[in-house]
Amino acid sequence: MLAETICSAVSAAGLGIAAITAYRKRFLTATRIAAYALVPVGLVMTGVVEWVSDIAFKPSVWLGFGLLAVAWLLFMTTRAVERRSGTTRKERRAARAAERGAAVGPAASSPSLTSGAGAGATAPRAQGGSGKKPRQAAEPGDDFSDIEAILKKHGL
Image (cartoon, rainbow, N blue to C red; front, side, top):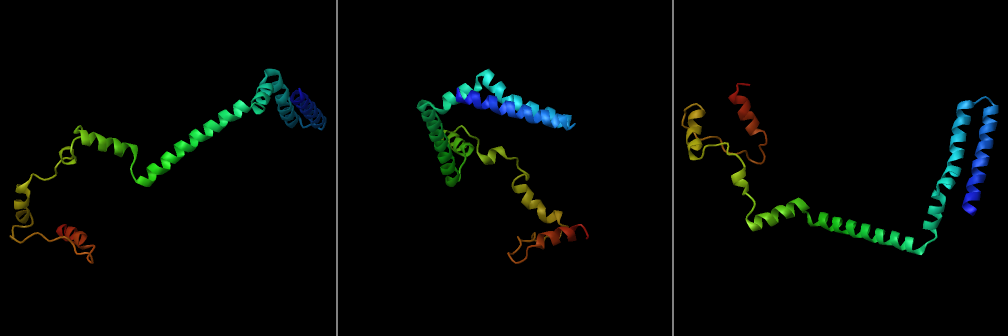
């Protein structure tokens, strides 16, 4: 009952302010103020105010909100533990499938770019037929050696 009275008073005050604003020839602003002023009365008439006051003063409703908060806390705790372990649900699911033998091995699923042992035998001939061994992998201090080799190969 008190909430309805307060909402009615707020609406009446808002409509009064809208009337004063319209008297000052600011009709667009007055219309906007009147629209805001009618909202509390509309909420009272639709029963929303009564519903909210019933929620605010019932202990069972607050227990329900408490249970929702506990559930949210449990979800967030499991997510934090999952992130600390470094695995995701997809990774764990894939690991379980691999344990059962249902997953395909990574070597079988990725396409091969070489044709096996024959590619290593043709590499020296592809470099110009000199019979030299192909250049070894770059040393840790020589980061751009592979790039230099590519540029030399193309004559740049």
